[in-house]
Length: 194
Image (cartoon, rainbow, N blue to C red; front, side):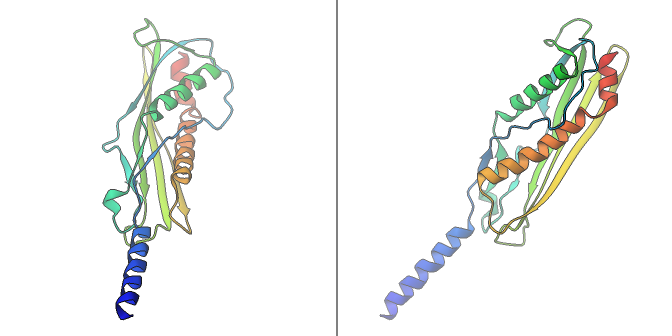
């Protein structure tokens, strides 16, 4: 009888520990520009380049008792989605998006320079996530260039470890806010208009 209750206790303890472990997540993030853009340009040609210049492709960890095995990354479809949003925004603003190498075209280069997801390291349970995103944009025309940093962050508390869908939405929201800030900077628009 004692042996049986010991086995039940061991099984319950194992189940509890497994519940504290989190699997890795690859998020399919689709950032959107979330503010209306008014046409201000007159079909000036602009080339677009979007790059991932982060030092690490890992955003962070989901925490838990094995944090090194619960990394969060974004899928390879994220940068093409960002590029599509940038091109759409430029068209809404009245620019003509043209291929790289087009003579006399201005250029907009957008670098994803930081994307992080930090959960408390001191806790087995994920109760909070600090998420941040930073884009560095460089606009160039024949005579001038301008560079700006556009960041957004969010602190989210949880009653339970967030699933992949929740984390995808949170990271998408933060990236969307940072991306929107690029197109709210009048200096970027002015350089591309000249």
